[in-house]
Length: 573
Image (cartoon, one colour):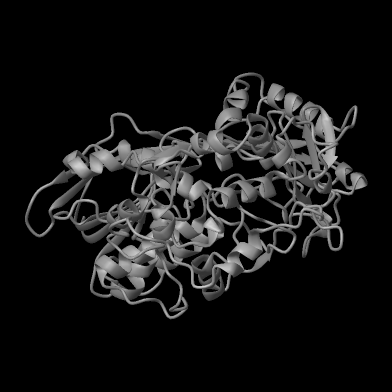
């Protein structure tokens, strides 16, 4: 097979790149998409459990913010994919105020995190009365007022304690400005280890402020319908150099890129794989598949790139900077119950947070409450949402007798097995341990056993982790520009979430893909994407010199915004 463009990776950035190229150049170019497994979606992965056909378990990415994630929101609207709200609490006026926190053996509601008499952490006097988000905002404003509202180039200029902030790891910087108890409180009550990980302080320091006014959306039929729809339209859409329905090649693992010369300088050597019970493995004793291409788009995370053999990765700059991002491990466990027992505690949606190994518990909904839902009380709980330090706890429970579940009273016709087939079978011990911790978080001596369960770990190859974060001491402004075409003389491109400004979000993956297509493939900006939206946070190739003053047109206004009244209690948003 000879191609003009070979796109490798069936996640959202790969499916998007192939779809955009087919729409703009497909009539004159031969384009194909290759995927390691039998599933399009990458780290967007939606699972439907028995008894819950209208409540989707998102074992990967699960939501977006339409006011901030402009490419995602615009693309979803353009594709006419139905959406639904992803609420973070009970309906107004309660909101998320009733969400639970179970920290150091003490139960609190969200609104109580600002009460120093109730928070079981011996924080410093200056840190008292602040919840984890407001505590981080205060620390940020202590270091530099309104740091979060600066452009990335200005943020890269700011120094703290005689050193540029981009050279600090976030934890290293917090050690200078925050008590250890304050840091532990921020880590435990924040829910995500990644929020306070020792990643680049420039990207970590601005607090992620989600309040009841933050609107989240997801796709009604599952978030992975975004890449699935893109891949389907690419494969079955307009006529082109590659015939319809022969453009997507599943179960192909890219093992090697051989660089030569001529019209098709890149020979891609794929190992055929097979997927059985959702687990994908290389097929032994099977001849490799060779594809020649003029250009290659690698829509892959860092670990997947590291698994490819090629002299391309011997380039000194790429060899140094491919490791400029941390690979953060991630894990999700869902439990399905015959009734939403948590509703009696005032919990409807959103999350509860604990320092127990389950860390975050999300209330995903009840079947009978969904649009067109069946009249069942079957309900779904994301019982454990973990990253970094707590993932090994659950990995230690992976081996053992499988959890078989039981047939619930209400089940759609034709379904016999309550357990969906997954790459990682849930063990009985894992469910037992998680169920006990969930009961403890909700201050209940016992809760019902779930009738079904599903979990997924993103640690294993070819993903390596759930998302990425920039490391300290790296010029991320320059790297995210150049990583899209890391070797000047080669037409090999890297897109995806890993080396983006929106790490951990679909928006970051699409931003790098679209900017690559515009800057290096000559594609025009799509009509459905507003012209004012900047795909990258700074002009390329980077911010240039980081010396000089950061100027403010109206100094008094930002200072007034960050100066609280000492007579007024600070409510956690």
